[in-house]
Structures are given as C-alpha cells and as structure tokens.
Amino acid sequence: MDKIFEMEMGGEKIRARLLTDDAPITCKAFENAMPTKTFAVNAKFAGDETIGMLSFYVPPGENEVPSVEPGDIGYYPRSQTLCLFYGEIMPFGFINLFAKVLPEDLEKSVTAGKKILDAGSMPLTITMSGTSDSTSTSKIHHTNSTINKVIASIDQIWEIEPSDVTFMRTHKRPPMGNFPCVVYSNFDLFWGTENLHVASSLASELELDPAKKVALGYLKRTQERLGKWGFPEATSLIEECLSAVKQVDSKEDLITLLHCLNVYLNRLGSWIDAMIPWNDMDSNLNLLNIEDPS
Image 1 (cartoon, helix red, strand yellow):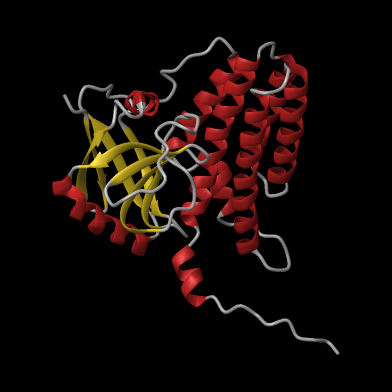
Image 2: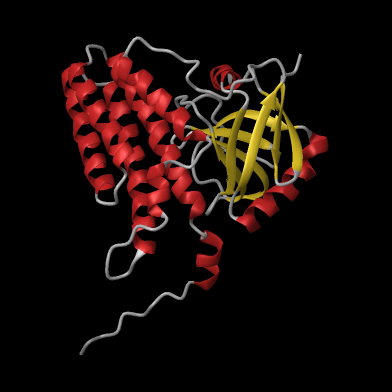
C-alpha cells in the first residue's frame, strides 16, 4: 500500500507518495519526523524549487538521480531540507529522491510555489496518517547526554524564533548598521554547517583521535565566528559539544553528535535566511563599479 503524506503551504494541500522501495532509509526517517511544522522558501538559484527544513539527518547517496522532474521530492542532506521541484529546474546539488507529488496535485504545487516565491517565506505543515501527533524530535533518545541536549535544543528552536535570531533583527555594528550583521551571520552559519559535514565525513575515515582533532578545530572556529554577532545560546551549546568531543570514546557517538549539531545550526540558519528579503534585494540591486583612483 502506498504511503501518502500531505503538505499544506501557500494555501494549498498537496499530497505525495513515499518511494519506500527506492529510498527506505530516508523514508523511514521522514515518517519518524511526522508531523512537522516548518516554513517554506523558494530556492535562490535552482529554479522552481520549494524547500523546507526537516528535523533529521540522513547521509547522501540513497536513490541519487542524475536529473529531476516536476513533482519529484528530494531530501538534501547538506541542509536537511525537503526539496519539491514544481517547474523549470536548474539542479544545484545531489538529493535523495524519496517521494513524488500525486499527479492530480501537481498544479497545486505550482500555485503554492509561486506564492512562496513572491512572499519570501510561508508556513509549511506536513502530516501523515498513522504517525505520532507529537512534532517533537526529542522522542529520539541517546545514551550520550550532550547528544540529548542538542536534540532538545533543536526542539526548542524549531517552531518558535530563537532569542539568538530575534537579537539579530536589531543588532548593529558601525558604520553600516544591521544589514551586514544579518547577512554575514547567515553565511557564517552556512559555512559552520558545511565544515561540520567535512568533520563528520572525515570521522568515518580517520581513527578516533585525529577525527576528534578535526572536529574540535571546526567547532571552535564556528563558535568564534558566531560569537562576533552574538548568538549566546548557540555558542554555549557549541562549548558543551567541544567538551563532549574531548571525552567521546567512539566514532559513532562523535558522528552522531556532529550530525545533530548540524541540524541545530542549520535550523538557526534557516530562521536567519527566511527573514532576509532576498527578492527585494535582488530586484533593487545595483552593483557598483570600482573607480580607478588614478
């Protein structure tokens, strides 16, 4: 029997079918995360693609396809996002193809996608019959207390704007004010998560001690960068993770910790990214020419 889920966004209810035979790991993680409330935005440079962050990490490589078509739904491991392709597509990265929009609902995905593109961001609720009513990720428990702390922290910032993000709405540094702080913090979060991907990938190849050294270096750098803008809650959590990495005694726990922290930092980044008026900025952008002083 097909497993169907529903995405409510942009004033539309769009049904899709899980590809459980082709992507069993991604589909199982997706089911376990249901229901979920998040927000949807349009991809900035990948064409007609609606994306919304999910609260779990699955490695890349499951049912990766060379191209996608309207109605395909992928999971992008690097930012833990659901990617719904609804029109002209310009692929930018590899996804785990794990679902397809029902043919009769494809036009709804186009309507919703265009509304989300115009609005910048809109709420997204995903439900699936036969799953728990709880939207909490803390139904996942681990023997490592710091991993559990990170999972609980993801819950705390999932549906309610984090205080670290609210602070960035008014934070200013001279001479330019708020805008550079918001944009630079957004990209510091992006590169922080990219670096954690490198650390977790290397951890699967290296012995434990060198893997811990790599992780500590990337975590410390991420903490330092975020601290320049504020982010007291995030930098405090990273400090706990730094201590945990020093004490961890298995590569499995190290990798799990890095994956969970990646989801946490990506969620922070998704809040920052969603409040930036990308459409307005793009339509009003007037790049400067560099004058020759001579």
